[in-house]
Amino acid sequence: MADFIVDLQHHSFLQHAVIVGILAAIPCGVIGTYVVTRRITYIAGAIAHSVLAGLGAARYCQVVFHWSWLHPLYGAVAASVVSALVIGLVSLFARQREDTVIGAVWAIGMAVGILFISRTPGYNEDLMSYLFGNILMVSSEDLRLILGLDILILAFSLLFYNKLLVVCFDEEFARVRGIRVEIYYLLLLCLTALTVVLLVTVVGVVMVIALLTLPVAVACHFSNRLWLTMVLSAVLTVFFTLSGLALAYGPDLPAGATTIVLAGGIYLLVAAADAFRTRRS
Amino acid sequence: MHDPLIELQDVSFSYQGVPVLEDVDLTIGEGDFVSIVGPNGGGKTTLLKIILGLIRPSCGTVRVFGRPPIKARPRIGYMAQQSTFDFLFPVNVLDVVLMGRLGHGPGFGFYSRDDRKAAMRALGRMEMEPLRNRPFSRLSGGQRQRVLLARALVSDPELLLLDEPTANVDAAIETELFEILNELNRHMTIMLVTHDLGFVSAYVRSVVCVNRRLAVHPTSSITGEMIHELYGGNVQMVRHDHRCSEEGHSWRTS
Image 1 (cartoon, rainbow over the protein chains, first blue to last red):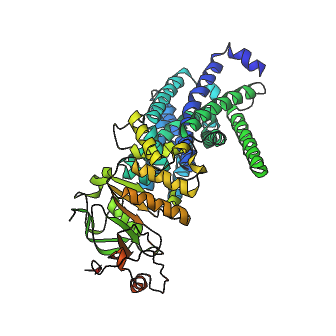
Image 2: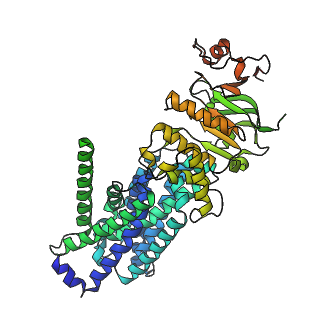
Image 3: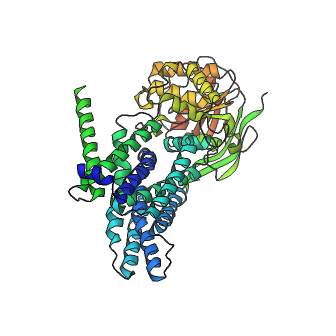
């Protein structure tokens, strides 16, 4: 822990990691609150896993066709938005079982990603960092893209706060008030998709839904308002990400996994304390 | 004679090939206080949703304020069944009432001072102002009904549509709710769905019986045979209304 604070002053890769942690945590708290209260965690999970297809395809094109401008994160953005729209449109308009579609997008996305990665020549060490995250490998180019996504997500979720609230709480009433529910639902899924891309850099594809939901689950114990839940979740996510990073640094543990274990542990403690208190009163 | 406020002609609706409503003709005049009754699955909620434009009928025409239902929505206040809400959702009483102000003003941004004033007025009307900061999840069934009613009223509607406002509340609260509705009925048309026929309030002026087909009665002329016909079994009737009239009772079938 002390090493971390000392090294933070000298190493730019650590400073980048801290900035990314904070930048990813804030929209994570905001969008995570919508995801948890609207109960679309598994849609977020499917989007997260489908991101691998975009990462893999972009990397393949970079290596095979020498499209050096095609950063893997651009591929991630495209894949996440496409899968969000596919799930959204199918669940809104086609009479399919929603969970079947979620499962299909989840697995097909991963499969496509693995195929691309297997066909990409050379040593693909960052496959591991896509899957399990590596906040220490963030470049300054990544940082600019992450900042852009951050601003986009926060701007939309603040501008449409009232509408997204009513669409999540009471879709039918929203429709009666003349709100285009379908459009706002798709907007929410797209914002979720972009948030997922941010989180992939922090904790990786596999653990995104944990970081999206655990801070909100903790915050819900202390808040009865949507905006307050968002603020608390964002603060908690910053805390979890930075503590995870600091705790992992000394013993050289994977930072993403440390963050998730920390968040999960605190969630279980809060839930247990709450259950204990309810039983006593 | 008032202009018709709601007009349905030859409306039918089927869901996945199963007919829910058939050949429905209905005319509701301004200032009426209508109760829709009928057995479960008889099409009461469907009828309400057709009037709101949430469901498009398979055939027939619907006019509300002389316009297609979607265009009429700004003039309609709507209160859904309580059972449809997620009580873990982090909102308080004022948040819920403010939702009724959406659709006014610009497309994005926050609620204006006028919106807040209107929400407080609506809460005041329901005597719920002191509970404005209480989480929606921590209200009793009766309090929730008042909040949802305040939300339906906050946009100053001319037509109020309520789906089972008396479900999950006890008789005392039901009576209280009908007192409020009777007061509101002085300047607004009210149409509500009740879960059974046992029995409509004395304030209700007309009863629409729905069981795939539809029949309209003035409250005073409901008899045991009608209930028998509607429910297909013997149902005991409790009468609250002892005024009787001969006219205005007709089965509408085509």
